[in-house]
Image 1 (cartoon, rainbow over the protein chains, first blue to last red):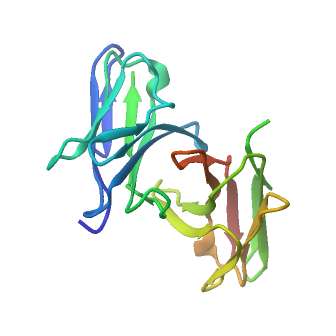
Image 2 (cartoon, each protein chain N blue to C red):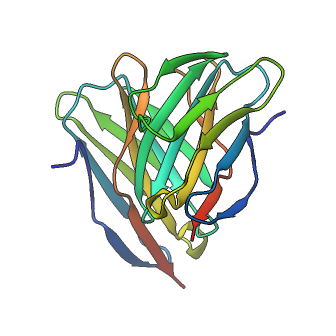
Image 3 (cartoon, chains in turn cyan, brown):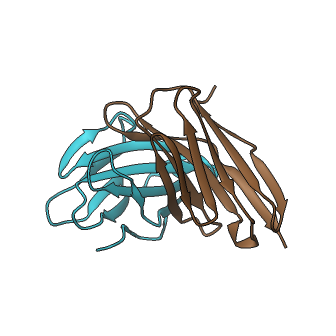
Amino acid sequence: GEEVAQTPKHLVRGEGQKAKLYCAPIKGHSYVFWYQQVLKNEFKFLISFQNENVFDETGMPKERFSAKCLPNSPCSLEIQATKLEDSAVYFCASSQLQDNEQFFGPGTRLTVL
Amino acid sequence: KNEVEQSPQNLTAQEGEFITINCSYSVGISALHWLQQHPGGGIVSLFMLSSGKKKHGRLIATINIQEKHSSLHITASHPRDSAVYICAVRGGATNKLIFGTGTLLAVQP
């Protein structure tokens, strides 16, 4: 598509439950980035992909967080055993090439109760 | 100290005023982005700069690579410009974005 699509828009989970977020990059874009926004304006890089390969995972918490980008499927970000501190808006962005402009999706607001 | 600093954090202006938002960074970068985030939360990319100056409508962005500083200017500001403006730099081997803490702009009619 012409825009980055993210689903769901909102997700509410009880502490300890699993959360799975999805991102469909713009068609033809090879790079996908996941960012976490907590407390209004604090953005943190999580992970990036080049097609289905992990490109940079230096921002991913080692435990509980995992992500995939499989051919012909939306990319996904999964949080096992969510914690209160995982409450945030998760943005996905895509770019055509590594050093091109990144286009952001609308985000998924995760609330952990 | 954050790698990307923005000032001011909050800015209130009257409609029609000329607005400047500043961004300083301390890391090597390949490009700098200015982003706009509206109250609904969506993020729009305004500019991507690696040198010089870019203009789009009433928005102008400049960057000085030697001084590690960028500015975003809004001419003839309008209430619909009210949003959070975020500076983000792209650096490192993998071009991940490092974000500033944003500037909350309110333009009053």
